Length: 152
Image (cartoon, rainbow, N blue to C red; front, top):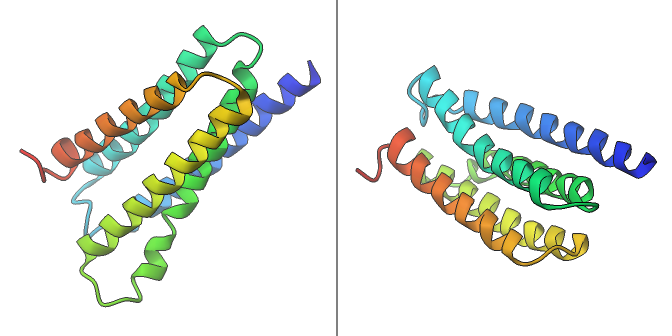
């Protein structure tokens, strides 16, 4: 029971730190985000993909659910931390959109790798990885259509 409490506490901590980093990142990119509604929508889409995974884990995983949630919360944190690469990339002569796109590529690549590791270490089926990939693809498409209007 002590491990479960530790997993829950760490998951909450990792998700909260991730949320804080993401909010700071989004709020400081006023060249990319036009208004507060766009920022809220972007944050909500990003958070929803993690929420879906948490709810699915709570419903479908038995003994491993809190360990798995802790591991994916760390993946979320790694993804948020990787957003900070934007400030290093900004040192190069790239447009804001190029910097932003490169940052997102780094973020997605890091999360793809570490989510796979989380699935393997948790000893849950690969369907969890593929399910998350579907959520990630949908989230990216929603960001490109609803938030940035790149795809119409």
